[in-house]
Length: 295
Ligand SMILES: NC(=O)c1ccc[n+]([C@@H]2O[C@H](COP(=O)([O-])OP(=O)(O)OC[C@H]3O[C@@H](n4cnc5c(N)ncnc54)[C@H](OP(=O)(O)O)[C@@H]3O)[C@@H](O)[C@H]2O)c1
Image (cartoon, rainbow, N blue to C red):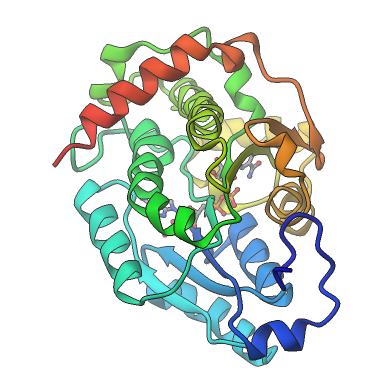
């Protein structure tokens, strides 16, 4: 029996799990917000946590907090800029050079309202939120499969419901909308379609995949929005990062394998927009993403 809390296995003896080898979770953007809470909770649940992000300096307080809790193996940091596909390749390569198994990949990092293009010429939200994670997952899939049972959890958003479709040409242009929210919605639809398609492709391999909306959460993600847009968010009712991490943790630790491919909110299976169920669109996104991430 695996000694980690996958498939609803209770952590009857966490210390025994640590004495063998702790399961390993890699999370993107674990230095602040929802990712920070998720990283610490996974360490508390017995995982060796690897945080992939842009700054060791900004991640050090989380690494220190995990160390201060004396939770099994040391948490690690790997440099990752999702706005650069070469950085994604280097990050995956560095993970492989650690010779660790990989039981859980959490595609958490994201930007909202940031305008422009990535290093590789993709619209910023699409490039960071979807394409960087698409490549990272693709490169780490052999590690996940070899370590199965394993999971991929992708943090999407109910903002995916705000888009009427994917304008493929716009994905290789700078952000067009003034707030960047239209592009954010497309990127979050892409997260959801990617997770569902990945679940179809990994069926029977021991890898299961989940996407989710964390709630409207009081984090730094809104920093790029113009000042006038912020009161609208507060009016919608922001929840804390601790509350916002709960659905990610549910998907990572508790959701049954039979729910692979589904989208969650409030720690339950939730309805997507009709576009989120569009298999042809998911396949088209997959095929184009594969082309776009080719070196
Ligand atoms: N907050 C909400 O209300 C809400 C609602 C729905 C969905 N979500 C989703 O929840 C996830 C977590 O967001 P959050 O609210 O916790 O936001 P946050 O506090 O701003 O955290 C975002 C994380 O992403 C990282 N990141 C940004 N750009 C990156 C890049 N190019 N390469 C690598 N990492 C990068 C950030 O690192 P730096 O510190 O280096 O910038 C940070 O660690 C996102 O996917 C977001 O879309 C949030």
